[in-house]
Amino acid sequence: MSNKVLVTGAVAAAISLAAVTSVDVEAKGKKLEKCYGIAKAGKNDCHAGPGTSCAGSSTKDGQKNAWMFVPKGTCEKIVGGSLKPKK
Picture 1 (cartoon, rainbow, N blue to C red):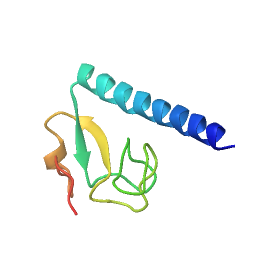
Picture 2 (cartoon, rainbow, N blue to C red; picture 1 turned 180 degrees about the vertical axis):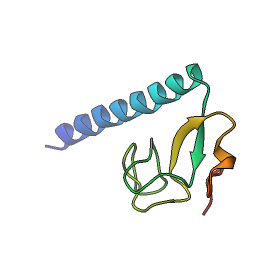
Picture 3 (cartoon, rainbow, N blue to C red; picture 1 turned 90 degrees about the vertical axis):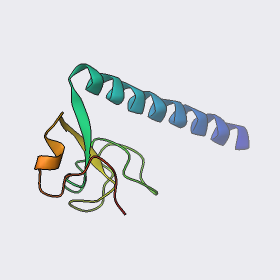
């Protein structure tokens, strides 16, 4: 039973890593930047801090450590937007 759990965990981790990597690569090609603090609950693009995994895992509107991609140069023009996560 424990081997099955280990394998399942390893597969889940690999899939999560691939998703994060592909999101960042996609953003670089489109001149996007991560903007923290602007996503609606459950609408973030990826990781939103401890206890979350990836896209759609933010728990409240404007969560300071949840980000979404926006066109470069626009994040800090959005109310609540920040290029770095806040606590």
